[in-house]
Length: 208
Image (cartoon, rainbow, N blue to C red; front, side, top):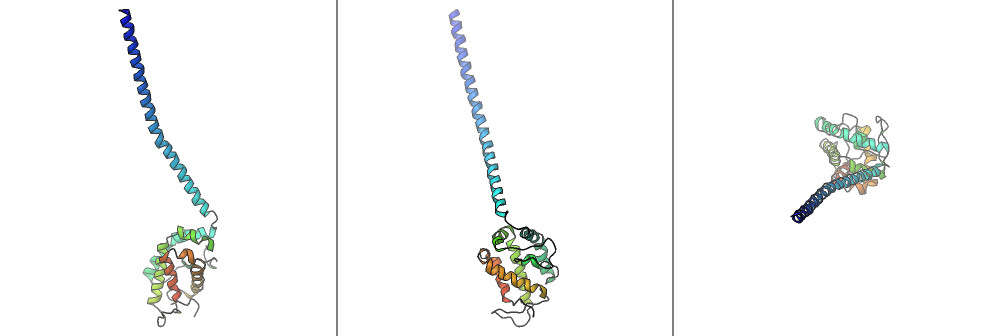
């Protein structure tokens, strides 16, 4: 009788141990499945930080004047386009941001802006290219609509100073030379903006 009881106790002990082992294994598996997304989350955060660092490295050699150019383009492009569409001419001061060159404008309000050839790609990647092109297209359309003299398909047309004041013509000439010559390769990757600049070559931008 005693022997039978001992055997029963032993069997129950073995069964309990096996049950505990199964529970322990199940808990470990659950912990592993929870830990995996956490590791993935950490990896994602690392990748994101790496991407942000790369972006910072790309822009670390960009001048303060060029950074200001991007800020002023972003802040002023909508109102510039609205002005041209509603007023049909340039009435406020914004020529430096639509026609940026390597030199800040003499009468440009502080902080002044400019762009260098090595910064062209960065600017085109970080500005609203379509909105920029639309502004240039609007200028071209207004000048052609209100042309002075007969329209010449070969170029050399006279820009109407009532649309774009004569004081701005020199800036436009230098900007066209910069964007269509020095910045040609990068600009040509943005066909709409390239064409918008090129169309303005139909005018002779010097004082009449």
